[in-house]
Image (cartoon, rainbow, N blue to C red; front, side):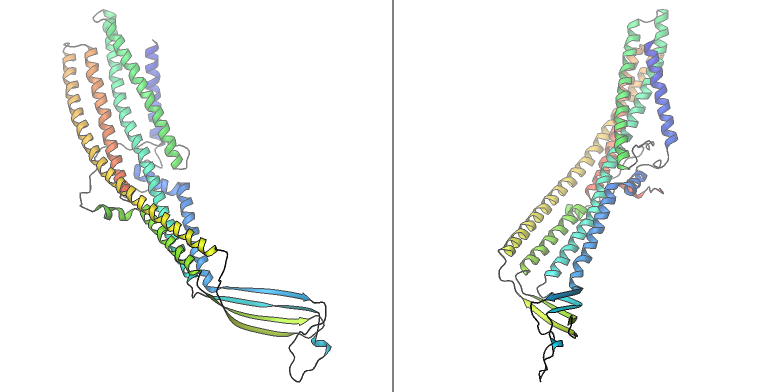
Length: 443
């Protein structure tokens, strides 16, 4: 009695869940490609990366603004302990009280223009340009990283859905056998132990379905977090066709040209090269032009408007070792960037080779499960015919049906794994998954 109630609850809950998923099909009903576009539009991580790229681009304008120097307004006041000359004396000297005042003030404006003969400003501009390129490549790398998480979760949901359907079909068959066997036990045609065996198998399948439900909830919560929506309630599209591999012969280095992480690492290395140049150029003389206009007068003396323009060439011959230390630091940072680029290159090559091997392995696995499914289907067909003719019992048939359910589950799992391997191969090449180009959200 308790077993029948448990079966009823499982079936009812499954039906309700499938109905809710069907009704919920909305924003993501178009499939994985649509989900990828939604992640692209909604992810806070991608928005943050875009904002960082914008800030880095603004840094280029900041660096270039140093070419134009700066202008300022000023006001000064000076107080001496005796009268002093405010204006210069011309020949013949006429000394009047109005020429002297112990309290003076002035106001005006000044403009300083650096002449980049040492190349420091240029080095800073070039370094910031490379950093801006790295930041924009970082946006693309963040997008691909989010896509990698998305396809892993979505393919996992597709796999679970296929496995669940296989075991639900098995459960439905077991329930039919249970009713027939229960009637046979009642009339004394078969032993009660056969009914117990079927009920035990039903409990096993129910437990498996409960575990799949928990895994599905975890995957949907994670996918909802990527979508910045809390939960992903929509149905996933079914897997029918198989992926195809681009058989064009290309060198590994050519395939890696599209990877944004490598492009970003290279840009950072170039930026550190420019920083090292700038550090070395601090040893060169600096030149600047300065123009100034000022109203200068005393509190009781008549003032005058004056202007001046001048050039200043300076060379700092001692700074306590700052320039030595700055050069050493810039050289060390350049070495760090070079080693990190080499590490990223090695990792990218390994990821690409691994993705290609994974694609081929997933293809072979799918072929093996296809053959296994064909064999299990034929075995189940033969056993069903023997059961219908009364040559075997229901217990013998459920073994064949259980094997068929596992074969179906393995087959759909292998297909989902193959598609995931195809997605990962595209990502390893620095490209988006193939389905991204076939589906696009209007949301």
